[in-house]
Length: 80
Image (cartoon, rainbow, N blue to C red; front, side, top):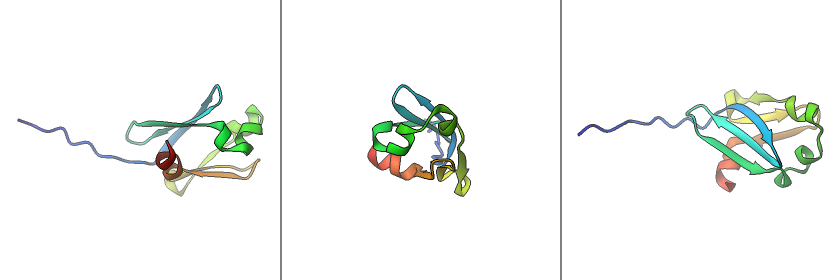
């Protein structure tokens, strides 16, 4: 019997928004999301500001410079 070895990698590689939620795709293929209500700055931001993000710490988090918001992947995983 063989076992599939799965290598977990909780670093963000992509960020998107749908309805009232923030979505992140992780390097290992997992997808996590959280309601925008948890992040008032993102909730109140316009589409341009939301789409202006960059990965920080090689994907351990995401930064939105125009609204000065930082969200760590571990925060979403702990609260999801």
